[in-house]
Image (tube, rainbow, N blue to C red):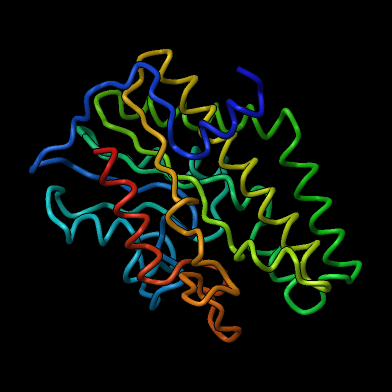
Length: 262
């Protein structure tokens, strides 16, 4: 199998290497870790235990659907890979049986890139932001950081079922043909593809070590629902702190993707 084929298989969710049985049950103790996408930013904001979180994020919707005990959401807007390890893992309750993780986007400043390119995709600030994020994404340090962070999550919750999510495409792919925005949109969406592939590859590597972990793809459910589509699931309100994050409907798609791995 070529490297490209492997990435396509992984990012579309068709990887099945040594999948361990899920451990979720009606009494599962559930903890959510990660960044603003795990915190539910993009929906009406509430005061969380560590920072501001959203009222309708995917952890909340997972619990509301049944099968999980009320979630302990340690996720925080702005959290990086290092933040998950330093600030979130130490608070992981003993006996946690389900852990979800969404992290990596802030290390690339994904929302910042989208904001920099929103007004004028041809501006130097946009091109610089894309170049910086791409360089970080392609670095070995970022790849190692992803794997190291997820390894530490597994070590901190050895009996848990761990589900790691990817990220959605922020923009509808039809916008890549736009004469003004097309180049920036294509670069941002392609970076999302690579980011998701790297997250999935880290999950696969941990599966080989018999870690009870799965990758939940969300890029496919969000197709035709990015910014510029007829039915966007991404918050585009410029006065909302949750801009460039999923709406409640988008987080429902996240919850469904995670639930399929439990």
